[in-house]
Image 1 (cartoon, rainbow, N blue to C red):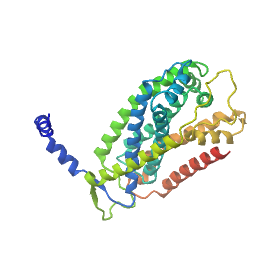
Image 2 (cartoon, one colour):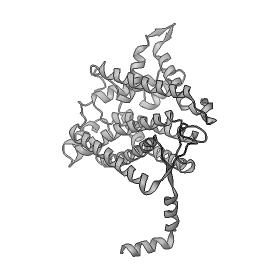
Image 3 (cartoon, rainbow, N blue to C red):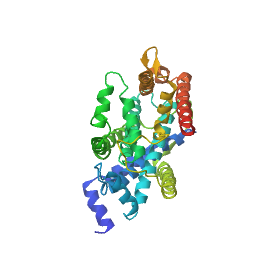
Image 4 (cartoon, helix red, strand yellow):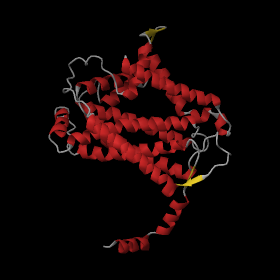
Length: 354
């Protein structure tokens, strides 16, 4: 079927002109902070890469503890371009989480969470949490020494929460300790449960963006500004950003393929100087700041509670920042966002060099 006939067939069933009209009318505010708009598109593009490479790898991965590590070795060493897809999946995940963190802090510092965009903030925040759990669950699928020890530490930390900690730890592990049951459970999370939630939340997030439009920072609200047509102006800039990110991911995947250690042995001691993935380092370093006992209470439990309270405050910040809701400048919450950012960066750097 030729293209004109295909277009005619499609036009008889769908109103193409109306779709083109909607796309043509969509505009994006133009101001000096507009680069923040592209961070969300970059994260979405990286999600697409993760879904594609993940589907390819799942065709050859064996989610059974006796064969999981060997199947990864087979993918990397014997499957045609297997090492590249595995490396692309690894670096895509790392950069996707970076893009989501940047998008979150751009939203936070520009007060894009203010009324009526609270649900946009909540859906994006949950997407970041899901992405981190994606990283943790995918990490264990290697079933090597480092991944096994890191997941044992991470799930053990969740067990320090009062009242619900023991349940969460048992639920994540599928038992009392990290085992083959944990691998099966994390595989189910990684390839089934988390993707379903992710697709749903991305759809909700994009729908809310279309409903509310792009947020304009308080510092430029009311000033004379121009709106840029989304297509082709902003769309082409999105494509350029995606091509740059694709080049970075492919370069890292080619030059720095991730290391795979020996097969996990539940009875062996953890490797020396074991550290979690970089996005957990600020938590890891925070826990090290607290002594074992504080006023007769478990220091790790107190640290986990304080960290949880800080995350909860950040999640609910649209309700606390009353000035932004009224359209007024909110210097206090700008400084709170800066403090959160610097704390995360400093603790992460300390975790790397310590």
